[in-house]
Image (cartoon, rainbow, N blue to C red; front, side, top):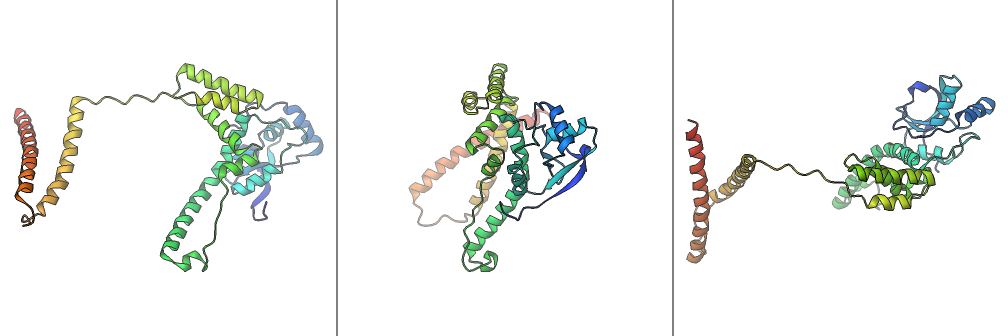
Length: 294
């Protein structure tokens, strides 16, 4: 890791910390963790964002509550790099670590990803500016005479490393969690997905559960059938918009060019006559509808 990461440690109110999505499903034996903290202190502060969203340390928070404490040391991180650095050095929660399930790791991973979104948008904007500068040879925007090759690690790769998973397993675990919580699933599909999620959490193996949920294809809601009136409204409105553009274009023709042959003119007359008949019939029917309500 570089030394450019930004974070600070300070004592914060436990109630200020927001456990978004509740990373831990099973907090395990908090008594032994609380005893360890009471005897040797807190080895690793919890990790939170500047807004107070918890990245890591839910068990430590609950152990502090068990001890009757109202504040806890927290490492405040402002970006993904800072958060990842702290997690990579924080593989043990004092001497009483309880390994996370794949589902819990996904929850932490998503919290980390949220830190990266603002940075990703900034990079996209910088990329567009740089691309335009290269296209226009704007050296002031490039900042130097030679364009610099720029590479950014994918967020999933960085996050996966921080939580101790491979990028492939992280992607697959996220998919299992996503499908298991998809509200569009039929009851039998939901049971299958939940079983796959439970198996993944129980065994710690991601691929078998991922292969199971891949077979599930959520039912797409049927598109509502338009009434006859709605179909006609759509067709007529669309036709008027199209014809208005066509009419505007035809209005620009002031005289037929001498190079246009009589056979071409005859074909176009036939085509325009057919279109005119359809439009005339529709206008007649619309007028009848108007008169019916007069």
